[in-house]
Image (cartoon, rainbow, N blue to C red; front, side, top):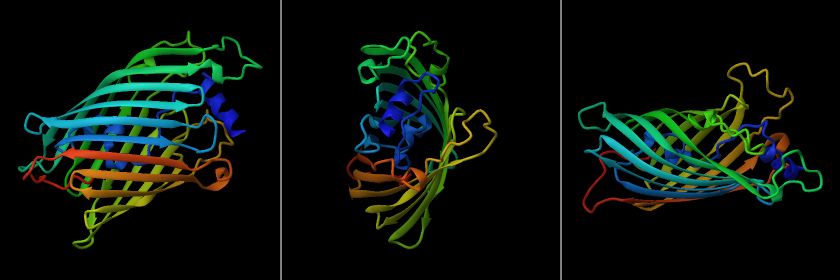
Length: 318
């Protein structure tokens, strides 16, 4: 039943295109906000792979690679991000170039407000061979059908050595591109992200980092992530998240009996050196959907090209 629902979701054009979901976004905000570009103030390469609902045919699989750095004495951040996202018969790829103008808010530049813009293209596709061949719907494709649309994203991000907050939106252009001729390719819709968090030192060896992410696309339930991590001796992050639906405003157009897709995340981040971060997250459903969804695995790795004898001005932990 879950497999059939996945294919139906990917093929039915009454649903809007959904952004890929991540569980380790708090360790590289470029995936949700272009204003994060250059935040680490060194050349940084980051990649991740996520396989959702393991054991379910057609379940989501997402991978991405991002590179970012600073220019103009740290006042500009630049980033390139490529991603691939598969869900049932749906198969999408994207590439974005991101620019962030980073405004110093104090004399030493440890506090900055960044304004970001990302532009790129998205290839939206559906594989008709994965759809039901025994009971085809009108205009159902028999092979691969795809189209390429331009897109833009924008955001604002503030951070110092103890606090961060950001707001962003994507699919700002793709939502207006007419793809009606592709009956089984979902129309992209804007997604909005609001996030904030803080770092609280306990002593020399331990620090606590709580944060939240509010995600909304106006076409479905609003999602809230509550996150908490403990940092041990600058070498290990351990913690997790709880994800649930919340009602912030009237969405009377939604189905009345929707079940909240509550889930929990357990995650660990290892720092073998100042330059390397290795992360793993495991998502599992809680509540009514627990017996219908397999677990989700997400791995990530990042490398920062920190020059010899150069120490970062502030701890880049967000």
